Amino acid sequence: MRTNGKVVATPVWFVEFDETIFVRSYADSGKVKRMRNNPQAWVTPADVMGHPKGDPLEGEARFVDDLTAVKVSQLLHRKYGLMKVYFDLWGAVKQQDWAVVSIHI
Image 1 (tube, helix red, strand yellow):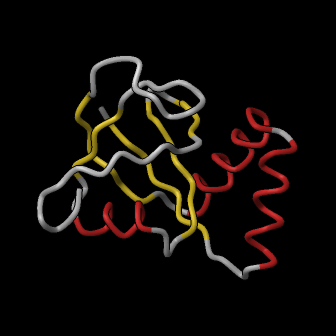
Image 2 (cartoon, helix red, strand yellow; image 1 turned 90 degrees about the horizontal axis):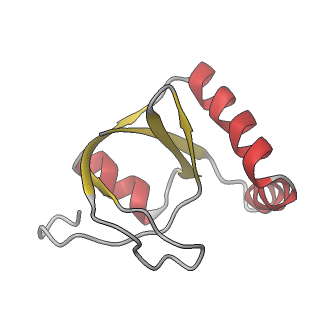
């Protein structure tokens, strides 16, 4: 949610683990900045193109510790394979830091 209260729809790569949704993104991305400013989050099932396929569920976003971030990275690799490898390489080229967020619904 923006500081003006407007909700921003943002498709993300995610994994589910221990009944929690985890999202990993560049630490300076807009979605991460918005979660730092306001932990309130809505999760909506969507197709691969980001078109909503259900009703939104309200949750709370929390940044995770380093150990959990490593586990999430491994789970993302299992789920997305080479696409994640390319994404990680691009982030390394751009010298990006990562943020991992858990969303509890």
